[in-house]
Image (cartoon, rainbow, N blue to C red; front, side):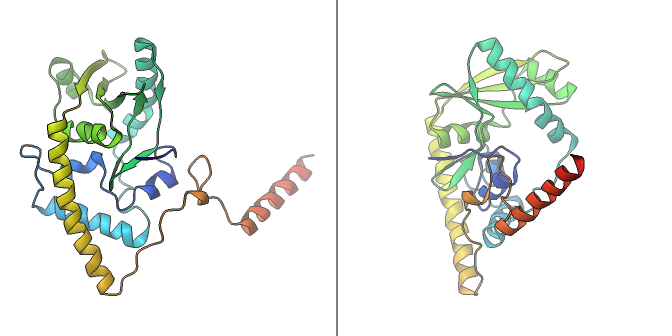
Length: 241
């Protein structure tokens, strides 16, 4: 297991995920009821997306953000702080966790065995989650547990206007084995796609290089660009002085 500690949402975070199936997207190629590889357009499109990222070395179709995703990003930190305060624990933020050809971005790690997953929903959906658990993200949660090796996940339903709901989900090894089997089969097709591209003369992008990014996950400018930026900053300081 390897942890890339770039801030989630940063340029480096987007780049390091390129070409790698992620737990948040398991539902795009794994059938939730049977936990087998899906044979449909959604699965094939996701495979094509990862192949394109492998060739280009940059995220594809990652620029779509709706109002719920924006609100979720803004409110996730509040949910994390509230959870840490209520349960008197430290929640450690991580960037991207990679293991055996798949990856995930947990909303936080708790102690040696736990993690959290925050879900921010609209008023109606949140009220429904207050009354009954939402099982539609189970592939992601068990995928996260399998990738990180953790034993439990507290799924947090957060809406600033309503009561926060926290439900603990224990690790399900039988489900994780089936998920892993589906991932292996998915990779078998993905590997064949890559071989076909290589045979046709296509060249993949260079591997991700963490040394090209700063602690905030943003690209470090080349030396000559850095010198020009510093010179510009120095001129501005001289004028101000």
